[in-house]
Image (cartoon, rainbow, N blue to C red):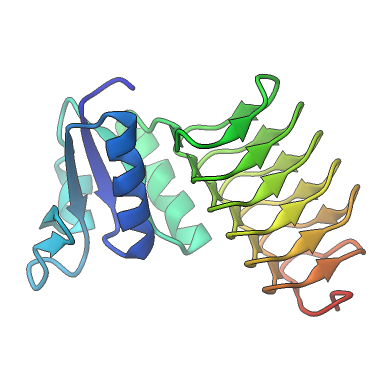
Length: 205
């Protein structure tokens, strides 16, 4: 952790999860920026200080930044805008996780409570690995991927940019899921998924 101050883009439910996680990591000051400002000035106990655009126009020094927006394309777009501004976007990891020392994790990725990541897995920038999901050995997750709570990804799976894996889904080993796909809640994926496809059910179709 580079700074004691964390700026969170997006004051929704996921932002609240990140703020709680960040406090456990030792951040002393946590502030939100959200487009609901000035109608809203607090999310739970954390202040909302302005709109997202106001912060992009005038980034604050000596702070870490994280994008807490669930929509994958929007989250990755803001991440890349912040990267051009040169601000620090750390990896945020809940203390109650199991992450292999042989995995790699990109900037701006958030790993929530109960997540398990196995050896030789590569995770891109601005990803969300949500509560209690598992990602087994030799997986590749591209930038902007969201693995929802309780989803299980078996070994050797490749997941393309900005793909969303729904809550409780199961992905068989060695499957390729292309970019911008959606795997529905509880789906069981046993075949490759093409670009932009939505698959549902067991087996997923």
